[in-house]
Length: 124
Picture (tube, one colour):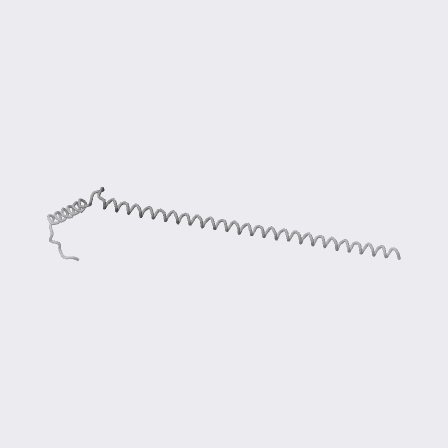
């Protein structure tokens, strides 16, 4: 615990008044708004703010362009996958048709062989 503070109310009141007076003097010491130096500082701050806003716009435009490019790449990839799937399905359908045709040819050949055997048996 700290030592006992011997200051009284008058000391605290004087310190408070002097702090307020110092703040008032500091406020009064500011140059007026039409001072050329203040105008130059305000213009510099405005230029910095404009540059910051421009960088933000550029970053946003770059982000949008990247999103568009990613979406276009995704769409192209999906179209390529769809085209590949359609080609696979067409190939499968063609192979199935060829297998069906081959089975029909084999059945016809077997049927013709049975018919020829029956005819040969009947001739004997």
